[in-house]
Length: 408
Image (cartoon, rainbow, N blue to C red; front, side):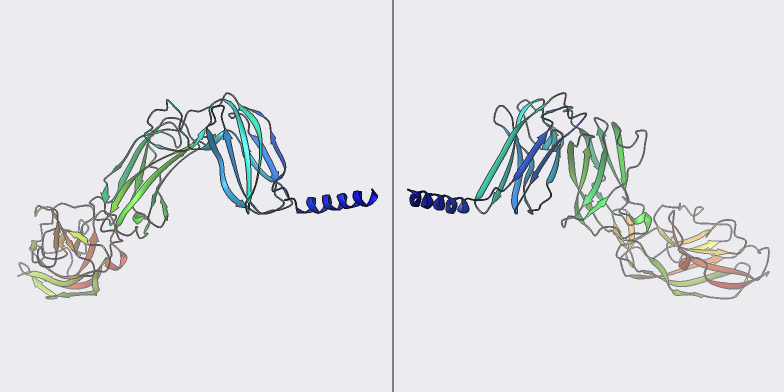
């Protein structure tokens, strides 16, 4: 009898040694009654070994809701802690309206749920479950309405034509964050700042975001192509909604034009009243974007009492022009010329003329001096003007030329 008992105990010991070890231990979930607007529950567990762990909730009708999708976790001695306030991954319910946005995370409605923690490892599975009751949950989503992008195609190159994009939307409730960004095919994000209007940031109401491709800060804009613009709103409970649309970028780039080598050729250093001071220079487009320009065109001759306005041309935001200025001038570069000749150096897009990237154009112009200046001799100089943007230091006050003006 003793020998039989010894054999039986030995077999039981061998069998228990072959039994699989628990994948998850020391599981705790509290409290089991939860008002998500005021507090959250804490779920703790310990993994003795590596395992894939996921957490779901199931309602009374058997519908499953993902709280944490299955992810690989490392086994360790310290417990894992997860906080739960009733917000799970996106789901839909019978009777839901058609939302003008995509729901990413959403609050569960009030009710009793069964939570299930599942651990998997090499064909072995362990499930631990319990119940939790949600009450007084704020299930109002942080909705986004009226999402729009204008224009849908833009060219961040400071040429004054479709240089900026405005992104508009309305928030239906106050949120913790409202984020708008441009994303390319590789997943790179470029965040877009809000143009603060009447509505305070993150408050319910109308919001506008302004995007220039980063060019106003001196950064190269994204390359030409079609991108996706996303707007994401998250409320204080962690509910998240998202909207998106596409935006196409063309002719993107920091415009960089120069008077080539800073060289200007003048025709004379001595002028008798009624004669003309003429110049010749070369403009170089040293950028990957075309440079917009407009007249008066090269070869135009001004009289002393004229300027580009009196010739019927106005200052235009974003255009490049060559200017001629002089000492004691009453305005900055009153005599201006386009940076090329239409159909020769310049190409037309729509109703505008452009100097193509990495091209050059010869610009000539004359000033017929009809009145004696207050002092003589005096200096004349040229410049390359990016109107309403800047005159780069390298393009301002280029090649000063001392000229004597004589009476006849």
